[in-house]
Image (cartoon, rainbow, N blue to C red; front, side, top):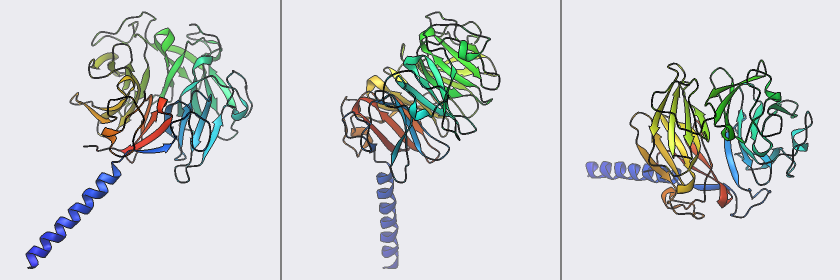
Length: 344
């Protein structure tokens, strides 16, 4: 009898643990009702997103021309940059008084200052942590290519999309319209080309970084070992850049459909916003295995619940926090969703 009772108690504990795990793995909407808007309940085509040093969620609402913040405890939202009007104004003023034009991606430096790519203005902007004022750190506001070796504010960019900080605190910029990744030294204020030479070709396996073509780098991420990962929508490819060896390495050339977002996860994994597949993919760096972890593969809107049954609509942004929660900018569903790592 005692053995039978112990067996039942063990089974009950396993069922409770399984139920808790299943609950933790559900996908849910953080904000958004499926319609575009700028309110406590709506977003308007969200793209790049990140957890800030204050533990809040920040994202770019590109069609509202703002960068927003959500307190994850209260789910209260605020605008941290932009007026909601399309434009290019506001140097040295409060960031909420500046007009933006489709901000694409947001990141923080080690001091807690916010940076974002103001894509259609062809500039990179910074919001001071303390003063909340906005300044341009790269780009003139006119599309083009110029300025390597000089001050970044006098250099020309063309449609900067993705940004990331390297281990030395330099800002890497996907200068997609120039087929380059530019590198901004924030201490000196100078800019240079780090990757690409402007030619519309892909790098070959093992190619040296210097003067090698890099067609349309779409999104970048820095791994824990300082390696740079690049996804390219043209060619549906994933590359690794090894700064120590100074070489390119092709990690995947199949399995994606128009990827436009990337985030580092735990245990040598990358999470990819596979935009045209309407899904989130997990890439194992060691094995090269690609696993779909969210999205049914059909274009649509939900429902919340089982991540694999949740239809998405061209997701562009993805971020993984330290707790293993994946945040997804489900762009044209006008929602931000989240789910726990460990799906199936």
